[in-house]
Structures are given as C-alpha cells and as structure tokens.
Image (cartoon, rainbow, N blue to C red):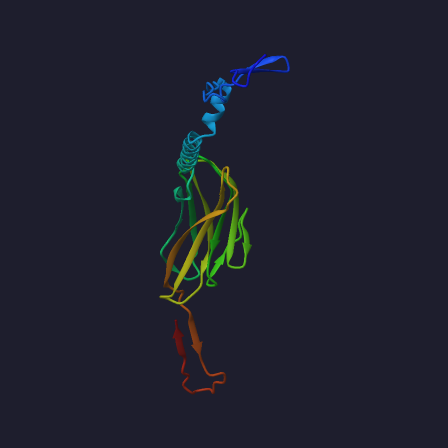
Length: 219
C-alpha cells in the first residue's frame, strides 16, 4: 500500500513520479532540427531575409534599366534637313532628310514626315504620301548603327525677303517596346530673289499721228 506521502502513485497500471508535486522542475524538451529551422524562419531573421530580397530586386530592376539604356535610347536617334538656305522663287529645289540610329538595337515602324508651308509646292514622288502640308514616307525597320536619307523636291513661291520654315519628323517604335517616339528637326529658308515680272500699259485706242505713251512696270 501507498501512503499520501509516497513520491509516486500508480494510475491505470503505470507509475508516475510526482516531480511537480515535490517542487522539482521537469527537464526541457529538446526540439528537433525541423522545429528549430521553422523557428529560425519565423523570428527576426525573416525580416533580414525580406530586406535582402528587396535590395536584390531593386538592384535587378536598376540593372535592367541600365542595360536597356545601353541598348537603346531615343537621344541616339538623329534627324536633320539638308538643303539650301537661300532660294529663288519658282526655282526647283531639293531637300534631303537625313536620319540615323546610333543605338545597338533596331527601331521599327519608322516613318519620315516632311512638313512645309503654303508657299511651297511639293513634287510627287514614289513612296511619298502627301496629305495637306505634309508628306510621309514609310521606312519600316531601321537597323542599329545605320543611317539613310529621304529626298523631297519642289518650288517656293513668294516675294523677295520672305521666310519659310520646313520641318521633318522621324517617328519610330524601339525594339522590345510598344511606346511610340519621335524626333524633330527644322530648317529656315529665305527667298532671296524672285523672277522679274514685266507689265506694259498702253492706251487701247491710238489716233494716227498722236504720240503714244507706254508704261513699263516690273517687280
């Protein structure tokens, strides 16, 4: 028989020592490796990992932007108008729109737009679509590190000393992008001379023996 002061008691056929009853602490239970690993990722270290992951993501985005800028930027697309700065009215003239792609990657859906004032009469040409005061030439794709030109011809009509302005625009879509970009150039032209126009005025009826006065006017 067991007294109430016995250090253990038998319950359901087994013996249980009353350590807590006598003020004795139980030995801590040792966690398994899997439990320790789980605790590691659920403590403050998870914030360190999140911070490092964020920094790696930011660095990756920055590198992608840097590489893209190395491969293509619209600042390396050039356009200019080559032609006379002083012209004669009613004289046939030719202007060349030069374009260049100094990037590594090609640019796609390229079109050249040549804009002119009312005083300019543009000649029709193959591949040139005229709409009002502008003409468009579709080039398609322009490879990287390449250049070319499109020529336009026509005549200015105006008085001596008058000014006119020509504008050219290259529109394109960089490879790997869906956005549309454009670059512009402008050229100023002055009409330095005009054809001589002679007008003669005389009386419609002339009497025999009378003096006749003729008036010559030119501009």
